[in-house]
Amino acid sequence: MHWVNWLIVIVYLFWVVVDGIKKSKNTDTVSGYFIANKSLSWWVVGLSVMATQLSAVTMIGTPGQGATDGLRFIQLYLGLPLAMVILGVTIVPLLHGSGVYTAYEYLERRFDAKTRALTAFLFLICRGLSVGTIMAAPGVVFSAIFGIPLVWAVAMIGVPTVIYTMVGGVQAVAWADVKQMVLIVIALVAIMFVLVIQMPISPGEALTIAGATGRLQVFDFSFDMSERYTFWSGVIGGTFLMLSYFGTDQSQVQRYLAARSVHEAKSSLLMSAYWKIPLQALVLLVGVGVFMYYQFVRPPLLYNPAHEAAVVAARGAEYDDLQKRYAEVFTLREEAAFAVADASDGSQQPMELFLAREQEIQAIRGEALAMVVEETDESSTDVNYIIPRFVLSELPIGLAGLFIAGVFAAAMSSIAAELNALSTTSVIDFYRRWIKPHADDAHYLTVSKGATVFWGFFACIVATYAATLGSLIEVVNLFGSLFYGSILGVFLLAMVPRAKGLGAFLGLIIGMVTVGCVQYFTTIGYLWHNVIGAAVVLLVGVPLSLIDRRNA
Amino acid sequence: MVDDTPETSSGNSRFRITLIRVIIVQVIALGLLLWLQMRFGR
Image 1 (cartoon, rainbow over the protein chains, first blue to last red):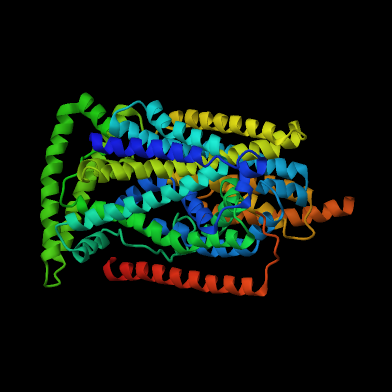
Image 2 (image 1 turned 45 degrees about the vertical axis):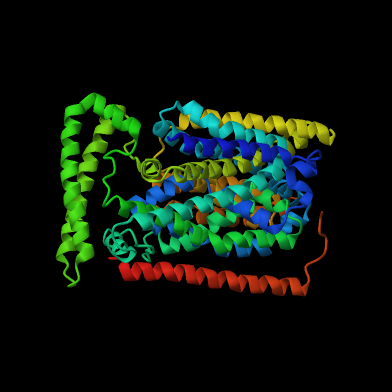
């Protein structure tokens, strides 16, 4: 990478750490460190909520998904606006007004200590692993792209994040998120601008070609429950996923617990309700734009440079032949793309020829990816390398550095929030609750900072061994669906007046077992798992609660 | 600072207005995407 791009990245990393440390005033109490003394404005919390949810997986994996699969992934977010509204009138006033530091602390007040302990424990497991995955995503890509060891790439992301999170607590995290969100949006808009300027055909012609390959197929209105992304799974399953994630996951709950008032907490969530879908559309359209750009500028046959080097080393002559075929068919496809753009008589022939060439290209790529599997024993998917390769080879100097800094920003904003939440839950729900309930704030703050370092180190270890995980954003969501629906079910059960601790505790366990069975034995899409988990907890939890009342 | 002021009717009315704005923005955003699909999709 050019030294100017490196300079931008290093200046950004340095600035975010220094600024985070400067925000550490008023964090010498538990309330100040964990929930900023409930002093944050709605727009700070709102941007922090958005930045927390927008990880490097979104910056790298989602445009990559847009390039290969188009816009249909946006259906995952269809339920988000509705979920934000529901949360605004249910869980947000409940948690913000109850004076708790964690969502699980509320569950002890409502049910009992074992329900609190189990949900908090599940959060620690789920988030602890997912923060490692979120750190692995950019780590693996940067390692391959820059040719540096994975552990260094992980450290570049993890170390500054742990420092400002540990020193500044939720205030540092939230204010860093604000700046990171601005950087991310600027980087995305800039890359889209460059794509439009450098495209040799008009945007309308480019969209026509992208549409012909199915990449503009946004909505799938079928009722096929095995199809991963449909309108219905997004609206229904996605609503449940977002209710659970934004309503019960401590990494998000802690954001709006820090808001000045219930009204400002609600308003902060509404920012996501307004802007998440347009932002996600922008991210995916960047991917579609890159796909179109690569119709006229030949991309590498293999996007992962480490994989390419391995194949060249092992089967150089064979790979050379494949490269030659690729170059020939690419030229033919490029001519076909121009023919489609120039066609003014409504003839379908140019489009049919283009689609035929596109299939040939995909077949050649398939052969190359098969070589990767044979030579490296690693997953053949390289969707996560499309955007970084594009950025580093096609964007002007400076803009590439801005985008890479944006990826760092996205990674750090998510990781910081999760480390902060993991530390808070560890201390409030376990250490203070079970081990040392009567220490002073100074003691708990020291333990919290130690917990942040521990979870940061844990995340780095997981990230180093997480390696290639397919489409990373889907892995993160799949894993979460195992637990999220059932945990949401517990919070929904809390709103049923007759529900008791036994019902919540056993309902949660049965809910997770049920979702596990559905995942293992059926082909039902993962977005539906959240609905199933929540429904099982309610269906089981209410009758069990009645039994509990009778035995009371 | 903790705000202990109970939700007032004007606060609820403000929230309803915001809710309507959210719905309008989403309808516009999704409508644009649907137009994209119908205009350029296969």
